[in-house]
Amino acid sequence: MANQASDEQLIHWYQKGNADAFETLYGRYKNALYHYFYRQVHSTAIADELHQDVWLNIIKSSSGFNRQASFKTWLYTIAHNRLVDHYRRNSKQPLHLVQDINSDAEPEIEIADVRQSEPEDELQEQQLSNALLNGIGLLPEAQKEVFLLYEKSGLSLDEIAIITDSSFESTKSRLRYAVKKLRQHLAQCLGVKL
Image (cartoon, rainbow, N blue to C red):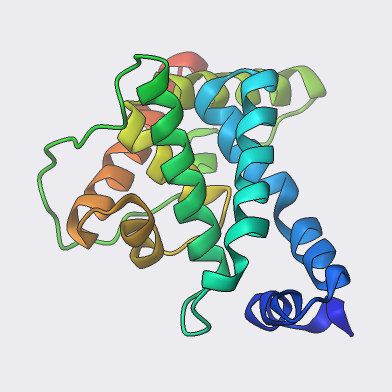
């Protein structure tokens, strides 16, 4: 029954003392959240620490969860804030706002169309995967975060705007520029003309 419940119902049950409800929520989001951190910091030790901090924060502040809100948005807002704190504490540039040109067009996330044909063997698939990961690593922090939240965490642009405390238009532009840069990077790596 807990596996079929909504995230919001599960956090409500956890607020009422049901530890199994928390375990179900944790199981739903542990991998995606960990990968969100790992793709940002490129260190398993730091990703582990940030991941653990967020879940401890969820446990401590679960009573403050607003049932009208989305649990997923709340979770990733806490994760985003923890990541910003990490950058600040380590004297790295915090996630910055990038001045983007606004567009009314919805971004299209179709990285696979850069390939001319399906990979014929595992080596080609691995090369594509490595090129994509390398390209993601080269993105400016704000674009990388929006791309990862959209693609890996399945959040909507509205949710990402809330999480990153940005406007919808800025969020959409960051995603559009990230996709454009990734396409260019993959085309260059694979020797494909766009």
